[in-house]
Length: 193
Image 1 (tube, rainbow, N blue to C red):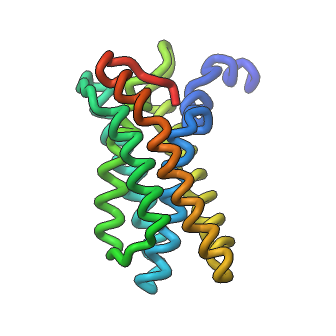
Image 2 (image 1 turned 180 degrees about the horizontal axis):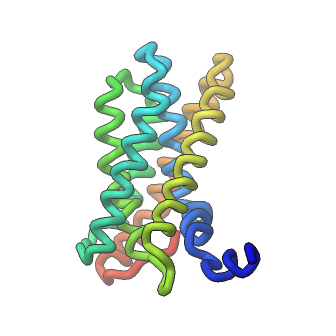
Image 3 (image 1 turned 180 degrees about the vertical axis):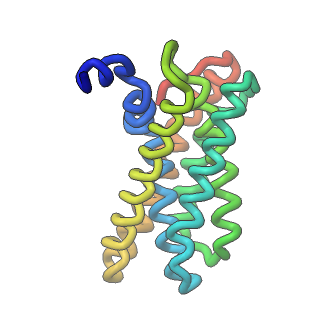
């Protein structure tokens, strides 16, 4: 009986869950949010950043997905995603002193683009609610991985340099993706990560 029930909904939540792992742009941005949350928490002395910054991202990603699912079209989604890599990676690399609320606003703004992309790529025949639950859970996992990596990389001065270099690598990936995304955004197509 349970096997039959599982087959009745073969890919709903799981297709949403795996989606962020197969787009390098999404994966890097979501890990960068976790890395940056650790830096904000360390600089403000408030562990609230570990929940608030990633939480703002997940929440606003849902808003972006709802927008796409309701038919809201945009030609800047790809550029917003690439921009998230450049800005979030740059923030990890430069480690500026910003308050938690600024981190929430920045992360949330870029999450709208990631959410829109996820919502626009809803597979045919898949429950939107289960698909969204899947990619939101995956995003939380990737944020947690970034937080864990951030804690591991903040222990020594050499590790701090590694953390900043990780941010620079994310920003560099964004610059690398930019030319193709400009072409795709003009044509209205999605690159697939």
